[in-house]
Length: 117
Image 1: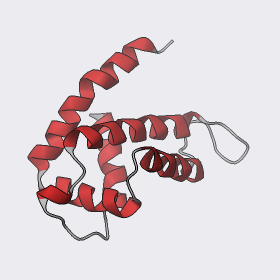
Image 2 (image 1 turned 135 degrees about the vertical axis):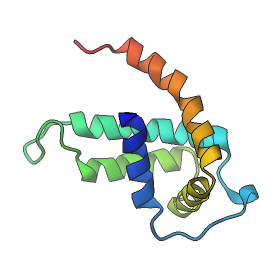
Image 3 (image 1 turned 90 degrees about the horizontal axis):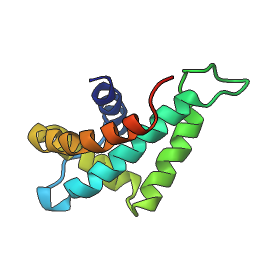
Image 4 (image 1 turned 90 degrees about the vertical axis):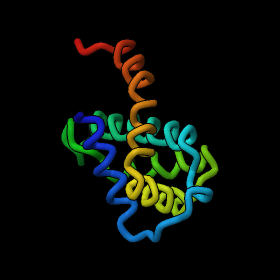
């Protein structure tokens, strides 16, 4: 649940000023799943990164912005395309829920690989 809240918060911030798209114009669910999974990892990593300006556990928003930009570039998606797609997914929560449901097994597998000590 914490994961979902974190991702939804990020996505809401990114999509705040967008207009909606048709279903044919949105990022496909499988690609969106990969993007959001990578963004979750970036979000987690940015809160683990410790330097003199950021306390451990606090998100380094500068680094996070760089990570997000890199992720979108990797998937060849512009910020505008991502924002428009997120807005569409927010307006179609059953599709967004399907994307999250597909992410859970992958994230659970990664979590099991790196258990808390």
